[in-house]
Length: 247
Image (cartoon, rainbow, N blue to C red; front, top):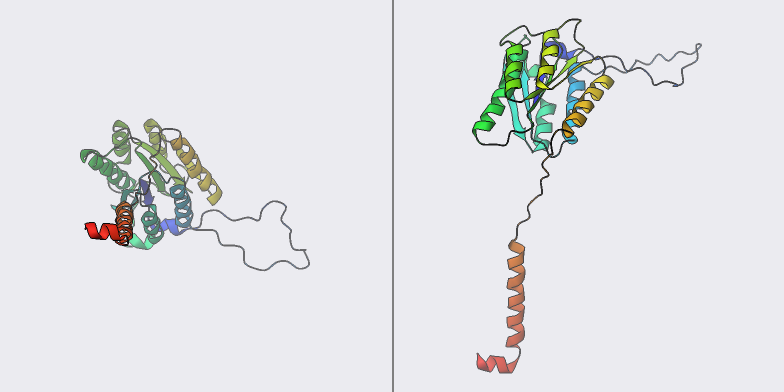
C-alpha cells in the first residue's frame, strides 16, 4: 500500500536538474540565456517513481492511500494496475486543498486497517508492505509511532521515504520503521528518490514469491467447432443416396 502525503508543501520543487558530466558549455562570450529546466515538484517525482514501481510488480496487489488532515483510500490493493495508475495520475495537492496539516499517523492507520479488513475477509495477507512518502513532520491526528507498532505486531513492513525533510523532522518515525523490518530513506533529488524506490522493489522481491496471473480464455469455441463438424458430416452423408434412403 502506497501512503502518500498531499500537503501543500509537496508542490515545492525537489532538487535541481544539473547538466550531465562532460556536457558542452556555451562559450563565455555567448552565454546560454535559455531558462534552466524546472525541477519537478516533490509530488511529481514521487508519482513518477511510484508508477515505475507498479510497472515492475505485475504480480502484486497494490493500493493507494492519501492523507493531509485525514486519510482516504483512493484504491484498495488490486491487480488492476491500469486503473491504479490512472488514480495515481489524478491525485494532486488540490485533491485535499482544504486541508493543511500532515497527519502521517492517519495515513498509516488507514493502510493498516485495510490489511486487517482483508484478513477478516479471508484474503491472503502474506507480504504486507506500506511505503510512506512524506516531506514533513507529523502535526495532526493519530500518533504515528503507535501505528508503526501496530504494523509491527501484524507483520507489516513499513518503508518511509522522507522527501527533502527538514533536519530532524520525523526522526522518531524514521527510527521506528526499522522495528517493522522496513527502512528509512532520506531523498533530496529525483535520482535519489528513484534509487530508494528501486531498493525497496529489489528487497521485497527477495522476501516472497509473487503471484503470476494468467488470463482465462472462454472455451465455447470448442463446442462451436464440434457443431460445425457435425453439420458438415450431416451434409456429406445427405449427399450419398444410400444414407438418404436409410433415413
